[in-house]
Amino acid sequence: MIQVLARSCPRLRALDIGKCDVSDAGLRALAESCMNLKKLSLRQCDLVTDRGVQCVAYYCRGLTQLNIQDCQISLEGYKAVKKYCKRCIIEHTNPGFF
Image 1 (cartoon, rainbow, N blue to C red):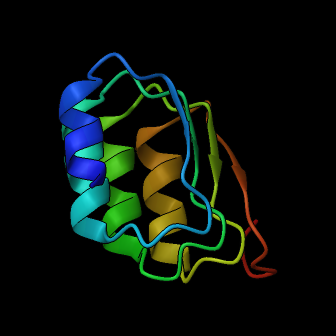
Image 2 (image 1 turned 60 degrees about the vertical axis):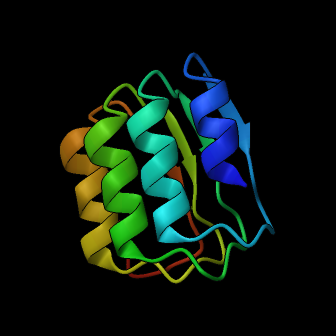
């Protein structure tokens, strides 16, 4: 489903898909098609892992806001966002992140 949205809306700049069953493959499709994404909320997306967040960070380097609260994202995924998206504010619930 997210793949259809991504292909249909390449100029998408903000998206809230919190509490949805989006997977890493869906995030990859979104990131590859919607490279102008600025704001993305993945809050409580249980299927999202570091791999999906890394794809978003790599392809959507203009990202300024990312919500990964209550997601299974490790420090590795967090660091990828910080590396590729220099101005991104990351909302999270992991006390191990800076």
